[in-house]
Structure formats: structure tokens, C-alpha cells
Image (tube, rainbow, N blue to C red):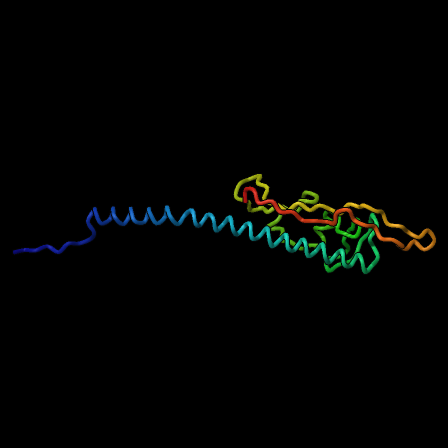
Length: 167
């Protein structure tokens, strides 16, 4: 009796492997996209932490240098930072200069807005809105010496608010 050895896979075996791989891909793909979204949100949250740290550092230096009036500047590691009531201004010379963010990851071209470049959908609001300080009580400045005798009291200190829509 001449018995031929089977060579290769049967059509049913190949179809079963393809079906199994398709099911695994269907289950794994949504989890992979969630990981990307979570990574973008984590990147934005870390940038908010960096912005808040820069606000604190600039404000601390403004207190030390007695620069709590309407306009001023302090010198930090990255150079001079423009201030409004002792907090970084919502400009490129203010908060953007105070915080160092990668230009590959963040778009800082709009004043007061730091956008994540790699948002999932174009035009998404995956960004940090920086709100500069406003004043409740203006500073009192000695006319003879030019020193601030009573510092300005901010009605609202500077804040950084992240929006995650479309990340």
C-alpha cells in the first residue's frame, strides 16, 4: 500500500488560523488605541505640572525681587520672563519662556495656549489654556523711592487648565 504523507496545511486549518488571528486583532486593536489616547493625556498632564511649577518658580522670584506690580520681569534659568502682577504673562516672553516644552510635541504659537501637536483628531482641543493673573487691589508704589510699599493683591492668580477633548 502506498501511503502519501500529507504535506502543508489543509484549507480548513488555514481558515481557522485566519479566523483566530482576526478575533485577536479585533480584541487587541481597541486596547491599543486607548493606550495612545492615555499616553497623549499623560503627556498633557505632565505639561500642566511643568506649567504650574514654572508659575510657582516665577512668582517666588517675583516676590524675592519685589516685582508684584502690573508689569515687570524676573530672570530665570531660560532668561528674562515677563510678569503681570507677579505671575508670568500669557505671552511667549512670559509663560512660554518660563516653562521649557519640546517644540516637537507642543505648539506654543497662540498666546496663552499650549497645544499638543499629536492630537488624535485635527483641530482637537487637546491643550493647556494659561490664564494670567488679574488684580483685585493695585500695588501702592512710593513716589519718592519707586519701591512697592503694598504689593498688588491678585484677584485670581495665574492658572493652567488642560482640556482633553480629542486627545
